[in-house]
Length: 87
Length: 87
Image (cartoon, one colour):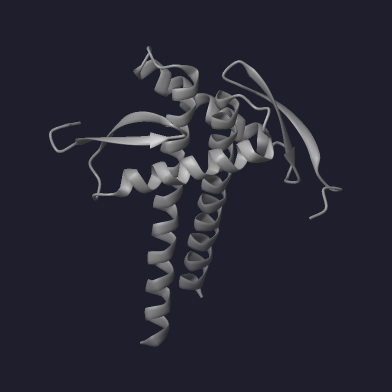
């Protein structure tokens, strides 16, 4: 894979800087960083005694849940559309 | 929201135990934990000098990206179906 069209983006998440490679539309990585930052702060507020690592892992788990749910919905919809075609 | 039907699930992610509340089908949280664990190990292999916190935050960022992509695809599909209805 060529990295020629990739640009480095610097974002702040939970008070720490991250350098992320992105070849996407401008502002995308910044938006994703805001989303992760917000979720981390929410989880931390609910569980103030958690370490930053645990907050980040639980945020990842939460996002994995949303992602898999969307994937399942998409598969169900694709199946429905396939069945409709057969009628 | 009632937590009466929720059960506590213990999972291991990146060598650490997590107690997670779940009211979903059995095995769901365990699968999500395996997914997060795998992604963390992949990101850590690619960047061996990263701290565990940074590995977890980048994993969350990666999952947020996948989740938003799926959401965008779903919205595009819904729009397409809506347009088809109008023809």
